[in-house]
Amino acid sequence: MTFNEYINKRRKELGMTVDELVERSGLPKGTVSKITAGINTNPKLTTIEAICRALMISVDDAMGLAPAASIFSLGEIEHINKYRSLDRHGKNVMDSILELEYDRCNPTQRIIMRPFYAVSVSAGFGNPLDEPPEEEIEIPDTPENRRGDYVVRVSGNSMTPAFRDGDLVLVEKNARVEEGEIGIFVLNGESFIKKQGVDELISLNPDYPPKPYGQGDSIQCCGRVLCKLKRQ
Image (cartoon, rainbow, N blue to C red; front, side, top):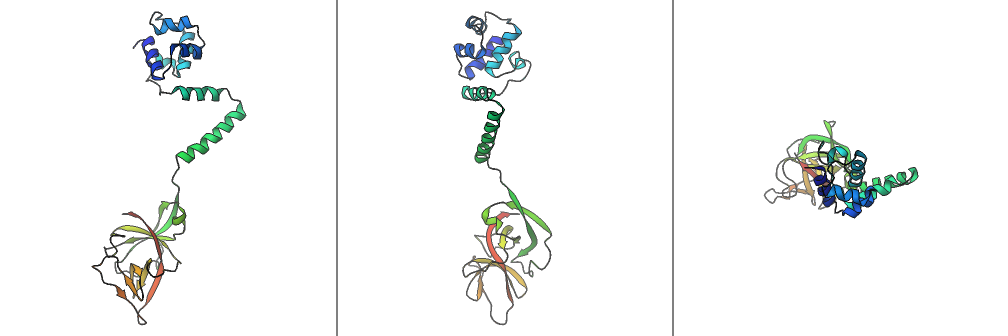
């Protein structure tokens, strides 16, 4: 592709007329017209540089010595030109506004760390909090998740469809579990994720009967389940 072909292609991509190219480059209209028409095929370097600045490309791009530059719209070019005309204070103000708006439009998911107890609940093991956690796990930093104190893994399908085998759940350790809420319980030495009933622990899967308890049973609540995180 010749220089004038590349210039015309780039100009059309930007939706720029020849008159606009003349205005932006600061060159005489006759000079620009001869180049775009392919009459002048060997312009001066200063002329090439002026045209390239107006089209927001490098000289190497225009001469076919490098990959084509990114495409900017006319509006983007105007913003860039206006930014360049600002003093240091003005540029600092615009930089601050740009960062704020970029963060608003492109939020970055923050994370927090919580203890992860690898012993699965609903698998016949004891209190998952008896031993120190083996590791910590990253979870999204949300208002709800900040209330959580630890993470455990669900075992089995007694709590389907809400919780399935392998799901990770976030638990608020010292929360009171009211009737109808889901919690982590240790009943007679076995740990479970269940719904609190009236003197019984209830499975969500109807294939599993409730687990009643009374005065002769040992039951401990290890916290209220806040949410399901992910499967592993």
